[in-house]
Image (cartoon, one colour):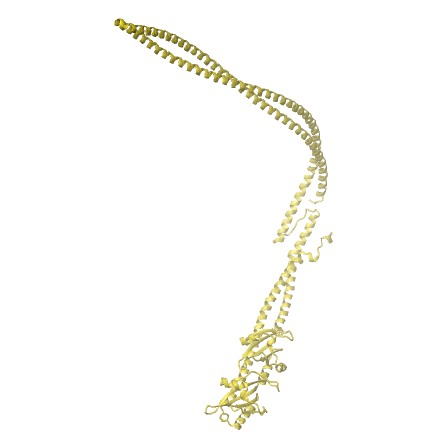
Length: 625
């Protein structure tokens, strides 16, 4: 058991914490080393460049002094009267003395305007040599002042040579020639080449074309090595002063070089040192920093290890042992001497957890006993429930049979209701036809009443006419009587008129009698029409009453039909409901069977629960509380 709980060292918390801190320290040391290295590199580079510039500037000063001294000699002798006199012998004597007193002059000479060459030491230049065609002669003539030519290598000695020349005039101001001297730069080259910078550093000088004219390795001077193949010489020639870093193409070593210009030769003096040597101090410092970092890292690592082990690992190991006891079921333990830090919070929380777990296990022990008893009661209750469910199933089956009978009866009643509804509809249709006929009779009676009323009105008008005719007949009769009287008075002359008057009177009486008869007939007609109107109005009233009764009867039939339809619908709904009820009763039977099955499962589950409660009790009994 102990071996199973032991952790591999690289998986332990102490290793992870210490490893993390050490990694952070390593990163910090690396960053510190990088920063220090950069600062030291910059400082060393600055110091090296400053030192190189000091060397180059010192050599520049020597070169300027050398050239100034040489120029002073040439300018001085150019003003000698013996030189200006044009006496070749005197001139030769002076140039000899100048050469002997100034060994850096390789040759001193005067080239006359006539093409003569007075030179010391003597040298055979050939009979066809004409100094007036030489570049130095022409350049001095053009500038009319002292000039320096470009550096060239002497074919015999291999030394760098420069020619300086100045025009010479006699006392009358007439041009007599060019005084010149070939100046060996060997002395200057030795001064430059002999300058040491550190262990491996040195200086060298190049002309305007980049060719080396002074170098510790004299072979480079002889072969005319050009430094353009090493770095960008053009930029150094333009800037005239500065520092560069470049890689030697032969040794592939990095070098730090500073440079200054030499105006007389339009060249550059370089002072350089290997980066390896320049940064040697930095490398030593890096070793020191590395050693100190390792020392600090080891000391900090040990301190962190001791502190973590004392304040972190040991309390955690105690917690692990305590948790192992709890894992084995011992709940009668607790952490003592709780720390006042995060570990202490964990210890307090663990104590609280153990107390809660103790209470939970105690409650589980009590609950498992009750659970076992409840499971037995549940099993008994489920058995009783099974018996009740079986009885319920029998009742539901009987109810289902009764529902089936109700459904059949409802279907028969629905059929009868539908037949009754059909007969009612036929009666309602006949009533509607009767109402229509009565309406037609009422309409005809109304029209008859209208005709009789019109006839009565016409009879009244005829009566009025008859009365008028009677009145006219009476007046005619009166007039006829008057005419007869007048005819009687006339005698014989009035007899014919009397006859006519008599006839008119007789006709008037007949007319009056006829009009009386007509009046009687009209009265009789009016009486009968009044009687007919009353009879017809009575018929109309009776028919209207009959129509109202028939309409009410039709409404009753309609209500009967609607009631029959509603009854039929209710019966159909009842039949449908009884069918659904029958179907539901089947489903209830199926559900009760499912309930019975579930009850059986509950019984089985209660038995299993009892077994599980027993097992749980056995498990909880393993805890010490």
